[in-house]
Length: 78
Image 1 (cartoon, rainbow, N blue to C red):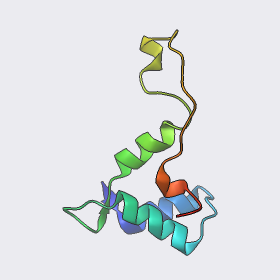
Image 2 (image 1 turned 30 degrees about the vertical axis):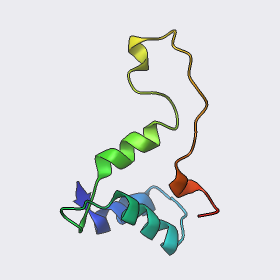
Image 3 (image 1 turned 180 degrees about the vertical axis):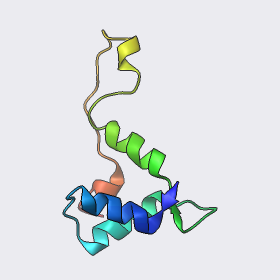
Image 4 (image 1 turned 90 degrees about the vertical axis):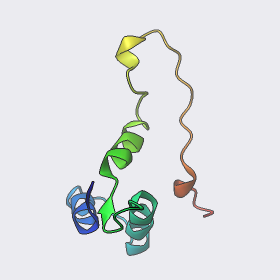
């Protein structure tokens, strides 16, 4: 876990051009329930990596991958 302010600063440093509202949505989605000033960065990172491939694919290289389905947090209707 990391501090919410460090989370936003890290994303900003990566040149993520998000609105203040979008940053807030990400923080709220990944906020730790026990420590509200902390963000579950590991879970965030796992979800981001899931966009590109499935975890442990090197153990089953012949596996057929399904199409990526974006989580509801990214749905523009929400």
